[in-house]
Image (cartoon, rainbow, N blue to C red; front, side):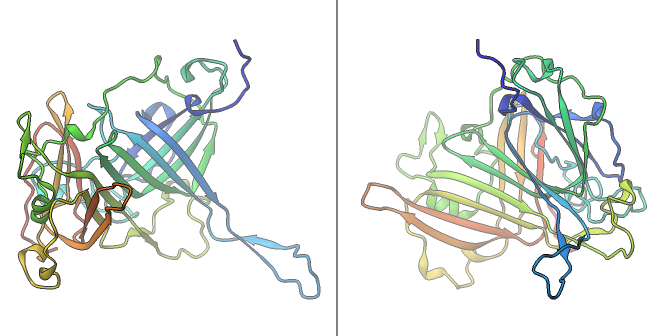
Length: 370
């Protein structure tokens, strides 16, 4: 047996998290939930500073720290059947309570509202061991770092024909605590689960734009084993959130008081929601209609992706009914034998994205403009 190298590799790290809509920043590790299916974790710390010019000298001796350090955290994971997505909407048939800006979802402001709610934020716990033990839970030298009050900056899902559904998570934080006490018990055995894959997409409940159906659904033959045949190769859903912060003269949030790190931050609207559908081209897109006010280009495309999640549950990605086509891309068909692939990209300017795991698929409708 080889000697342990006291190194950290993929089997020697774990991710735990806490999700909340309050300003609390000192939650103990014992309250954290284990994040399953993690494939990679990356952290980038930025510590900006400015040096003073010293005329007549080529060496700059004096500098000062700029306003705020910031950590960017990126996590990729596969979805295991029966496990929640990282962010889950408050799911019902109500448009207002499922909307991203609702106080029980992402929210809109860092300051507490009348119900004591604020921007959804996360504590991200990274736990590290070494290669002395076969399981991280058995390690006697576990160390950890906690990134406090992280804000969600991006969330994307890649649904491809060649693998499991990949969830990519982006967060930012201003505060890192090292070696917090009370590391909880981690799984006592290697992870094992059936991941959610493209064949789990429930096309009977899924709603695609009309032009995507016209291009990617086959006519002859139109089904196999009682399932419709589609030329779709991948579906991508992306959300990115930008924040603005009001100046707070004389205070560095996160340094002076840990409970209001994000107090003066608020969401820039609209939240950027986009989706794309890539598939083997089976027909030419009707070029003569581009730029013409036709049903193909009206701004009321419904998009809803539904996947079986096991145990009579569904994963739902509902992008509402106000998506519009903003890009068409044709590629492939080269002499090496590749297929011609067409990508249809859509934009949503109503900040509409509902992500949930539920027993039933809701019909969320609203004709109101807020």
